[in-house]
Length: 324
Image (tube, rainbow, N blue to C red; front, side):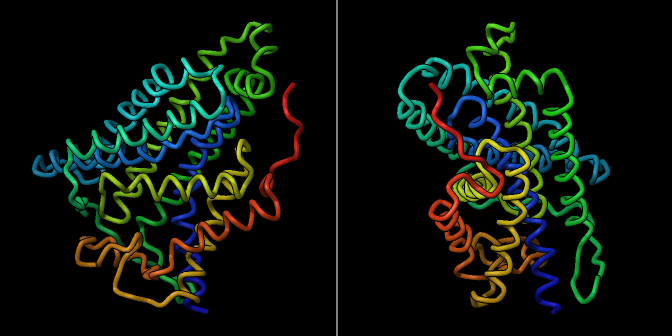
């Protein structure tokens, strides 16, 4: 029972991060029917920028929380700028092209961003400074740290804020109208280009926060980290129903829990932290989450395959006809 509770805590923590990243995928797909495979690299850039800023400010003597907040405050606008640049330069010219063209472009943008990060931050695994003290609390035999509590609170606050934005504001109404029918929305006076650009910017901002949370929690960052994280978040979006915002939230949390429970009960425990990095390289990050399974990543993609086979529209998705 203790193992179950601990893996539930770990799974909810990882799943909440997956959900925040998945929102970027699902918002873009819902509006322009594009799977933005470069979104994972935006998350990576957020983590890398925060790493650089935090390392720069550690000797300054500022409070640890202030340093992390400044790092996040620098990462978010940079990622928003990257997101806007992707939409403006890479995707907008191909908006009316066959669907395969923007999809291939997204993969190309992903490779470009990854290699830019490689040139700036090198190929080494970077250890995030663990400057925020963490205390553990025990609930029924399961340990939950203050960092895990903070991640859960921040992620659910972001998800709630996005839901309010989409369903309770004029901008959200414009986004939903554009997703429903861009041509009719344009005839009703909605600036389609602006709405799509704002969608990319919001998704990139969420991705930046997810990258900072990932780096702070696991204590590592690397230029390739966005690939696996992005694929898992995409799996979460498909699980919940691609294009469905509540579905992305549900899918992310469920995927994290399934992955944690599968790794805890089926996989064999080894001395690795999440993502297969040895504990010695995690600088303390692995002491908080010991998924520790050689088969950890299998469960995320097994879930994706099963959903595509038995319920292609996702848990909260609906079958819809092709647009005329």
